[in-house]
Length: 145
Image (cartoon, rainbow, N blue to C red; front, side, top):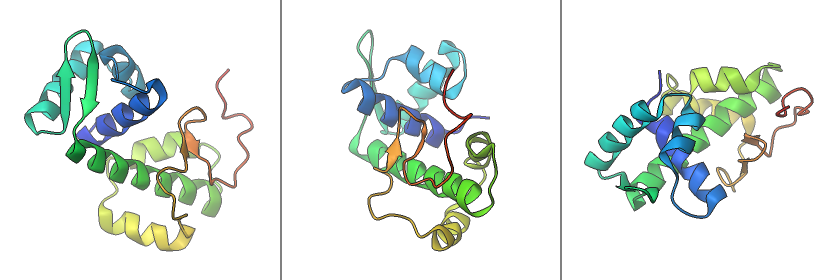
């Protein structure tokens, strides 16, 4: 199940890559849902004051949306690095995606003390590699075909 934070994270990363608004289709692809489902969640994010959606132009995050997206991305990086660097999980990306919706701030903070997060986090996240740039794990077999 996709949460609002997962959408915010996806919109944030798409906006950074596109250097502009995120299209509904790109958001749907990023969170692996139909465009109709993405559109529904985008409406909810708008109602909460986290995003602005302009038809035919795309979605942009509000200042509050950016803060929440960066927090969500930081949590994702923490989980990803813990799984890859500490536990040596080969499928760290998939596992991090599953865990990000259920890990609360307290657990993320405790994992953070173990991984010794870099001060530039979440700007350490490499959207093209879809992974934290601070990972020690080799990206062999994790890159897109």
